[in-house]
Length: 167
Image 1: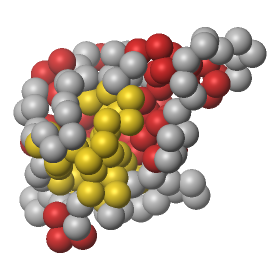
Image 2: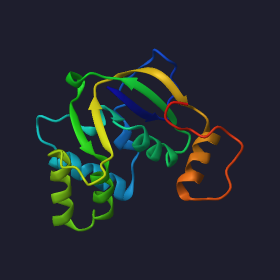
Image 3: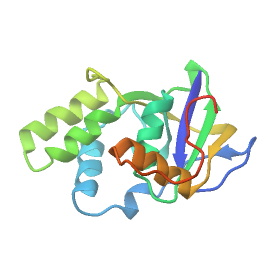
Image 4: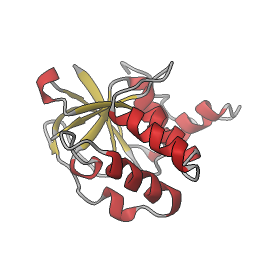
């Protein structure tokens, strides 16, 4: 199955992307609270979010995430179903961020995330140990900013390639 990775590191086709094991150490405030709550609620049979490579199942979910990740790169890879360690809905992580200061609600959302509960329009994130890059979709900050402008509904876009699936 094809999957999509957003990463600040630069890779080329054929390169292996492995976990950084440092994602959570760079977080602050409510983002850190969210990750700590997810870790607290993580079942023993699931890997820590800090020890995996997270990829998106759909191009559009990855693109949406890419638009808000400054200086990030957009990659495509292939995985097999047997490589999947966890499937979760990134919307649940975003919902958790909104509700992080409401303990009972936040605990429930964290449990739903780990149990694979999906929202109506899920942004499916998949945990794997590593991926090999099949395609570099974009490493251009200008293309990322342009995609953000389009997503935000701005009328003006820069004279750069518009990223769509298959181009």
